[in-house]
Length: 112
Image (cartoon, rainbow, N blue to C red):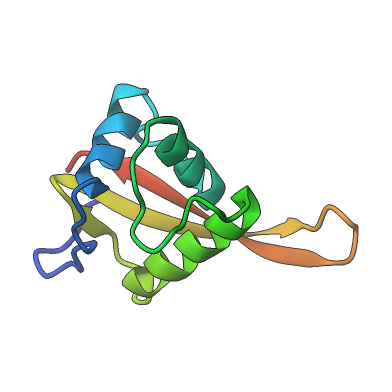
């Protein structure tokens, strides 16, 4: 996954690079991570995600984080985050309640 030179750059917060670094340290580069997993890593390692308040439940935190990063991937290209590339994948998955399918989005962090 190679981001083009004009790839969008994820808005920088003091902790945004820390999340990518922590994912690398945990050996989860090149792994599909749901937004809920990114929020879990952030909570476990006290890494703030801009716009996601700690007083929301885990499902709500994942929804908010997804809405924040979603527009960055509107053209389907990977984005750059402090020397890491972040790509988004989408697939359909059956709903747990058996009522049809839903789109599941995952994020893959990698080194260029």
